[in-house]
Image 1 (cartoon, helix red, strand yellow):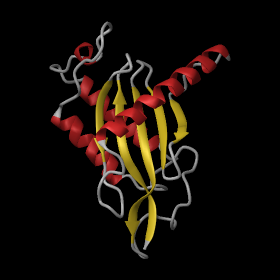
Image 2: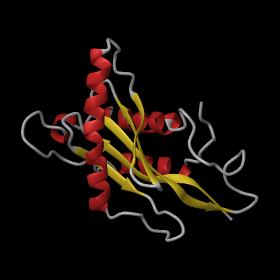
Image 3: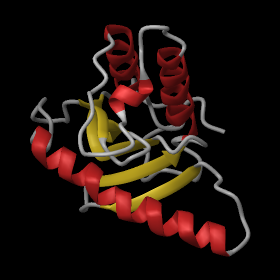
Image 4: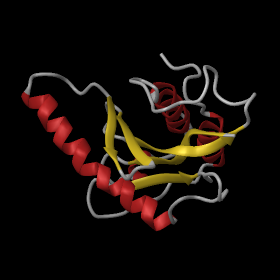
Length: 181
């Protein structure tokens, strides 16, 4: 038996830094999330300062916002947060559990067990999250301003059944080293 990385949490944060959606995934061997929903919410909030500081450094160096922020920070020896920001300011955060999925000797990721994640390994996940979000925005009944109000705190969470199912599918189907560019 070998442990490979898996997604522990997918988070979508609005342009006004309000949480829009959080999906948690079980980790091996407990088959339960490594942290409570509140702890994952705090982890997602902790990434906001990193997004802000990297955005400022990109702007001051003359470079535009590239979107993929890569590794935001290693949370502990097991969890790491990766980030992506859309051109509209919506942020996607993926928390990866480096030992989250148990695979048998013959199954699992192509290319053998993974020691860590390579550069660009999360691009496929961010592309899928962005596609799901764009599909949500195309729904005429979804009003983005209700979910990320320009003034005040809060806003509605994303409750679209299709979006929730898409996030669950993305997190459950990701395997490191497969389809990354």
